[in-house]
Image (cartoon, rainbow, N blue to C red; front, side):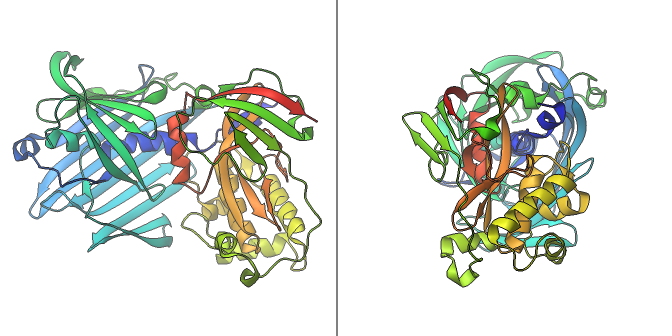
Length: 490
């Protein structure tokens, strides 16, 4: 298999996994127990300006600058993240900026989140009013508004660990929080445990610290805090870590060979070679290392029992005329609607669909034409972004994530219900994280615009189905999941 195919089959991993793990350190959270008792003395001592280097296996790949200042009616926080990410030998710059205002009781008043890379950008901003969080996401001038109901006004802190610190969490005790991720508009639970205190070396000094570890979707992240609650060191999965440094040290350059290829270290070796996967009719695989996480393993072409997954290639029946929205069951018709990142029925989407398909085309014909058009016109290149269908249509470049959101938007605009699936696909002796689609033409059929497949080959292993929040579930299996091919049938 050619390198270019390996270079874009890296799936949802970089954007959601890397960003989410970093975002835990400066995130929105709502305690799902009683309100946290705030230690005001710890809050007042908190440094207003902090620099941290980002390392991967002890080589610098980025820097974080955090600020926290008093205001007349509350506080202002900020975090800037700059890093270099390597995917299949292509190193790209990624910048993340998060800012906002807090009320005197530390609840969030407003926030603004920006993610920019060489080709793409994403913005989410919002504010809390009464019992809801009002959000705006997407491209400037074309943002989608959404609202998230809240039982309590969310809080924000310099890190999720700061909440545990200010709550005076006792050693060997845990507390759960719900965090809000602006890139996926999702609430997720995170459990923080205070471990035994440790002495670590920071900026040439040995310091007694409080150690906290967070379990996020099965992935462990740990932080060491000083006596004033200042974050001194953090570690995460796949060799990622952060360490407090001086501003001068932070300005030093990034290691030219610092970033290890995330695509490779997140991939899974196969026990046997799979030749010509596109001609296989069935595949049996034993799966382990999921940690008991409930994935979307069964249903449709997949059957899962006793750790063995059987994938059977779909047979496409002769199409009938497209059903109207009124004829579709509600649980299927919902996948014709636009979402913040899948802008179905946008004027630009309608104009493009009219160029690709004919009004009297059968549903199967529409799917094939749209998949083929995206395959031919979207340049296959790994990018760092929160996938946005309208932006992909304009730039016509991206990896599997960009292909999948654009396919979903075009199909829905053409009257074909469509969803996004994320999981693993086989290439050259390994399974890589990947994203593709399913389209409804009387029943759900897989479609992959990266490979121009409809239906997709049986090495596409669905783990989750959804557009963002569901994909966060993959974080818990990074570096843990194992696959054993048991049987392949032509």
